[in-house]
Image (cartoon, rainbow, N blue to C red; front, side, top):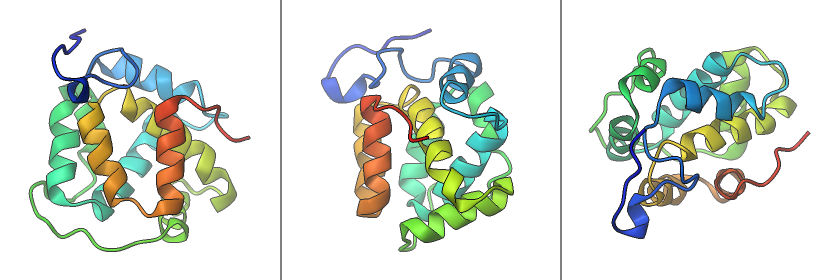
Length: 154
């Protein structure tokens, strides 16, 4: 596991390093889920994020992840490096994740919190800031709560 040293913006929020590995990522996600499959939850959230964030930010996330975590992103279909992000709101985002996982939209916040927490353990603070800047305010709060380790909603 590589711990990045240097500027504060280049250290992950968890202190676990950046792009640690699939096992640590999925353990972080699983810790906040209530029975959902962590790989499926991560894929649903990653794919939805990749449809709404700019290609540049998606590329930064992708590049920060280890190869085994990147495998989860393979089916997302958003070409990295293309700045075609479109405006979206929380309800649209929740609906897309709910549809992907075949769950009720009411369960999505907990799932987002789990995957966002796992993602924060894999990316740098500067990448996390770039993601936050592209999220709508009501979704950004879930991103920030996961970043700070706030307990997941029940």
